[in-house]
Length: 248
Image (cartoon, rainbow, N blue to C red; front, side, top):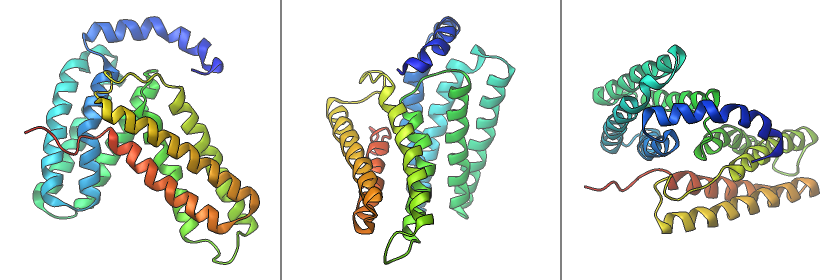
């Protein structure tokens, strides 16, 4: 944890402790369980894989009801309103998939849930390892789009500025992620998954470093390679927190 956050976190410790003990369950652990189902649902709806999307959304909805039962009554009216909003959004996503049309609309609803829960944890000072990974996705997507449309010969000044700004944002978010305490049991990981996670975090670190060096040198080829590697390795990090092969 960064020193700049210590004073704020200290003010929250007592309140959060009461909150977590009051529900008898660990919000971080249960958020990780929920994301085990949400992440595949996001992936399969984005891929327009109707059968797997339907199964994943049903699984996510069931896990959400477990999460809701454990935590709904442990906050104020704003807290409960967030849960009610998630209920509505899940129902909307399920209805779209059941109808068999516009499955990307279901992806939009699920992605809104992802960010709503991210904001809910942030507003309630719940430090959760996956949240920086949620936050990382938007600037990474912007970076990939910018690279896909840049000048084919060299880095223009405006392109370089945009890339450098996005890289700075990604570096800050990634540092926030590495500051969060990682407990293999709390995040429901196997030893193999934890080892893969640590290895892939190192790969993302490397890609970020390579991109920074390429931008500093104005090297388009190196920058293009670094962005592709960053996108691939980050995707693998994120997927570790999803259960793509649930037990029968």
